[in-house]
Image: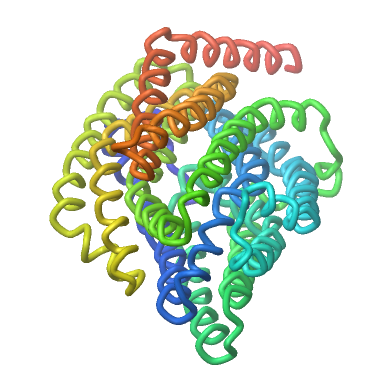
Length: 459
């Protein structure tokens, strides 16, 4: 149990940054092998294949979102019980995570594989990349179960204050993915199938390794037979926390799917440029994501311990960090954008479009950072119901703004990236407004009082 960390005492920002650094390294490794996918496809298979891979991104994220949202909810419950020093409840959460994640990921996997051709047609996918798009989507959807169980185990370990162990298995996954990418694409000539297959093999390996490690090193994971019985109340709590987060992610990805349809209407060059920008943005978001994950655990532990003022202090300090990083990335995008985009493809038209697109979206990175930081505090304190409203905001903004901006003659397809920036700005405003209402504090403290009352009654 030596790797667990109690964040309810000590300096907030110190805990958050120390917890964040392993997450950041792990997330960068994960994005690095996603980058390798794009680099290998773009340079060795072609721009059409790269467009096919990018065309599937928002759709596969839609199917991943259910399992990932549930994993996050399970992690939040674990953090709150850890903050309250309730070992029995932690073990109950872990036992029932098997049922929640297993059912959700299996269902998403089947739906993604069966309906991929119909989904690609709904996206108005160009015929020349249709076959590759269907293949890539089916292969990656087969990896949803592995993703769900890795994320579930990692979320629990992080909730206990251990952000280093998941890092090691992400590095392992990244190395395997890169090696298999090169083998399957360059040696076996498997194209987009090879890229997708390399990814899912690495995902299942990391899931198995993480679970086996947790079982061998963490007593919480060594469950007795009687503890494996389904607990309806805990399943319901996991679902109540996780489903709003899952639906938020699903709605966001649905809005991205709608936007992808708009992107597709402008042809393969814009599609390829959009794929590159998405990859770059995923990399840029990793400091925000890592900070947010650390802050979720911090908020969960402290609200579980009944210390909302520590939550406020951690939020304020983390917001400053996010804003500084967002401002730093703007000159990077303007000075080195062409070089960054040019690493993915050789076609001059795609490089020119991608460079300007990166400059547009970088101007809104501060808003993106505030979304991550504010959501993480709300989620960690159990105010996950807001996630539905937040997701609906992103859907409405992406659909509305894309229809407005891309129809303005002087904007044309540039409106795609102004849509992204305006969506971030609006969503950040809604998140901050929710935080300022203090609802998260009232709900979090009410849950703590209820839990303490239940413990008192059983005693």
